[in-house]
Image 1 (cartoon, rainbow, N blue to C red):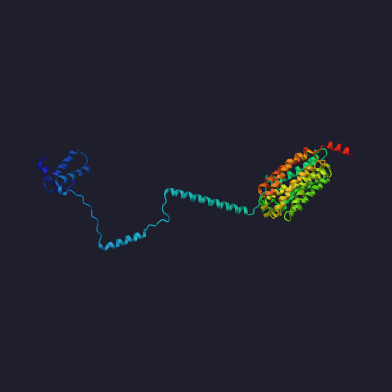
Image 2 (cartoon, helix red, strand yellow):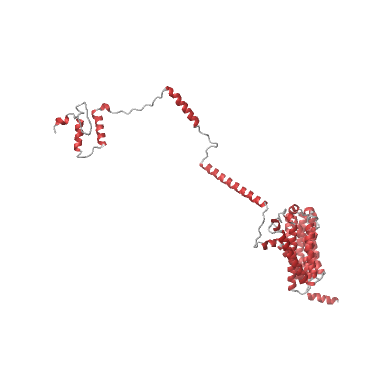
Length: 442
């Protein structure tokens, strides 16, 4: 290929470009381009080759065409459109006006504290609603379903099982103090019959006092007040205890003991129970009720009323005044709320005075026991310390007239009676001594 042909202006390149270069130096570029194409040795021409040729053309052969970076000017809006744009901006600002928060923004710790306070407040509200719902449910009347497993416990509370045990134990003490040989079968029949009579009397007492017991904190949880058993079941239980109890005492022991048991049920249910809301004489009537069981024990063993039976009854009669008056002193609000006429409510000075008087009477009754040929002369001496102590507490109760002194007197009475009866039993005169004395007198 000749040099002239290489330097001449090419008219056309089939399938590529048409060149028209004015300057002779620049006209050589297509020849160089073709030369590069030949050197490529069957390699494809890429965009990088074209870009490289463009940079060479701009920098070497035409420096005047080198581009300079100029900042682009902002388009100027026509004057008649500026007002429209400003109006639109104003309307947009009015539409997207930021709403100020009700409370200032809090830190992360304050947010946590507030979250905890809200949770605690919610918990307190839930507890309050739950307690309110429970109180409403407690106030509403609802029928209690009786289960056979709970029936023994309910009947034990209906019969005042602790008081019944105390009554049966005093009857047993009266039987043991009798100056006759000990008969085990008669002893068991007396204890069981007296216990059944006490269960019947206590059940009928709770049946009559349901409206009044519901007003007292001490008695509001009794079975009839809570509706755990029906009144018909309570009366049926009382009858099922009274009939066999009196039958055991009358037929199994002797008629005198059965009559005393029936009279005691009548005195407790028909005299003492209604008199509690009428007069303070109910305390003396209740003391008589408590004094009859040791007499029943004595009559069950001997079959007769002797001086020893009356002595035992007198000891139980006097013991009940410091015991019950001290108990009622701490329950004055309850008794007044229930409508009961008690000495501690209506006559507080008499309540303390009577308690002290009968504490001192216990000393005299203990001294009377050897005179009536019930015990030896050791009994007044041995029982003197405990009698003096309960008399001292009775004097403290009379002088101070407070709950502390009444509580001490009450708890002392709980152990004083069994201790006194035990000492009396240990100092009991034997049957041989009484027979010898009767022979000497004859």
